[in-house]
Image (cartoon, rainbow, N blue to C red; front, side, top):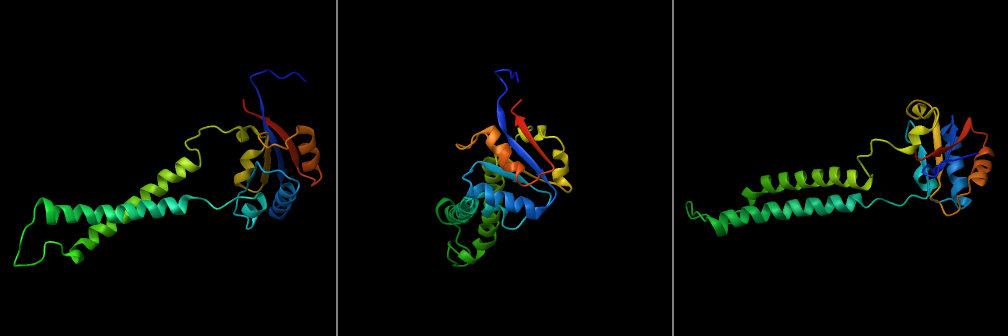
Length: 182
């Protein structure tokens, strides 16, 4: 079959109607040596991340760092204003009265953690991405309703279109499609 040069294969997608099947396929694909794959599901499937060979995200550490920055930044900002920049002695009280600094420090901790979470999620998920090649899959709109999809991508070192198609057909999917970047 003729393919224009600018269109490249993105991967092979199989469609299933059961969460148990998608979990089994993901496990067997990982055991078969496929590493660059993704599963799409309308509901969370427990154990699917492990079956796909996913590692834990770095996002919790980023959020912790953002929160620590907010906490120390808020504390330092108030210290600098109250002790260094404009010390004001009221009734002989100390200029560094840390109990008064707690609300602002807490709020800045939460603010910086939340901003780090949003920015980190966008960056780690590769967003914004208005179009993804997986959207070219027939019936992919059902991935939000009642069907499960697994895609073994062409970036996988072991990828061979015929072998992957034959492998996925062993599990009796409802459909197997090759999708392209275009």
